[in-house]
Length: 344
Image (tube, rainbow, N blue to C red; front, side, top):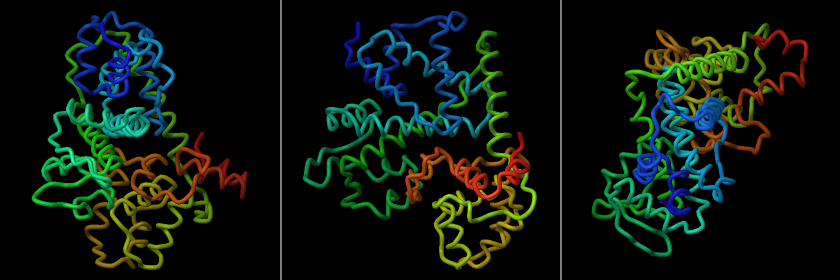
């Protein structure tokens, strides 16, 4: 039997070896997967596809619900693999990273939980226990996290004798990124034979995803685009590009995916980048065309949660995605135009 605290840890960090131990004790055949577990797995994937939070704090007093949630994680991995959409694999890994960061930073025994998860993931670290820093980790271990945010890159970290010094919050970020990498590297899972009921659930989820993307991400704009309707984060990057300022990689990527989604042609986006320092038209065009989907599915714009993780968020908008903000602002200025803009 597992204690309640062990089940809570396994549910919060379902990629951990602790969670695997629970699964071994609570094993079932795939063709006998409980409906409740399938339902939780589907909700998990739906949240990932929408870029929404999937924090489940209310389960802590119910061992049965905790076990169900732990069991749902590998089923969700099977379903997302069956859907066969690399962009959804990325979103699922992002959901795991966001959940991990939330649970770590809100843990009652925060330091103990950080160190327990680090040990579970076999992260090499040394306790520092100063006022500023919790741990020191080897440079090569730090680089495994693959941070994209400038403030978390190696060049911006205190280093001494090959060790990176991390305070509690940054150690939580590091472990969250390790959770993302671990989850993403595990996808797609091998699928020799999937029960028909899981195949059907995967099919339904894929249909919902396609429908949602057509409705929310496929804008066929009639007439002039309206930069005045851009969300603050995108508007700032857009203005900086127009002024010829140097814009970081994360900002460039996010503005490009957003502009592609609302109907900008690749050529228009390339023109936008022309004033930036060290502009290389050949490289820029290649990158923009890749984002726009040349030869494969195009990149979807980042959710607000992802924008925040890049440190690009400027305001607390009442939306979960920049495109929702844009559509809402268009409706305010021209309801008739919006009806012709969004494909139903």
